[in-house]
Image (cartoon, rainbow, N blue to C red; front, top):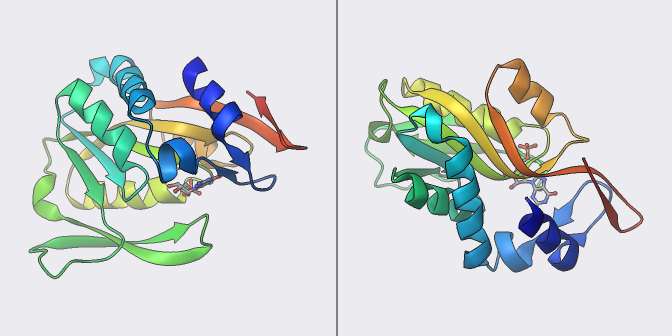
Length: 188
Ligand code: 5GP
């Protein structure tokens, strides 16, 4: 997606060979015009999948997921990284944070997904696929099915895509980074 690649090149910061910072339009400040285009792109790609719900992880997946949900006219659920005392019947799983390099517990309210739900998982970044695996676990604990994976920025030099493809899911990444070297991005 050209608009997104331009935003990454012009407004992103390469922290090191593995980590990209996009706080100015996705991870802290949100560029709504760009998010709208991202939502439309996901909606167009997954239009034939009969998606009934979009699932993401708080907090950085919420913006692209909500804009996609608006285009597809489906609800968006964000999985939580801490359990609020107001949850009635939560499902839990263990997750691993790539950027914080530590484990955490992910949870969601069971009632928001059921066996009839066809779920599109959306996230801001794909690195090694651990966030997706945890989300898939919670979706399956609720009896629902993953029908697609939408990623805003994929770092193709890490192993997330292979893991998701091996499971047979339709994965669609809007920007695919082959490498980050000498402060330059090489696109796949
Ligand atoms: P994974 O679980 O696929 O290894 O990592 C994906 C998660 O880690 C995303 O939800 C995202 O929050 C975070 N992440 C992975 N790589 C990056 C990165 O280069 N920059 C930022 N800002 N977050 C990342």
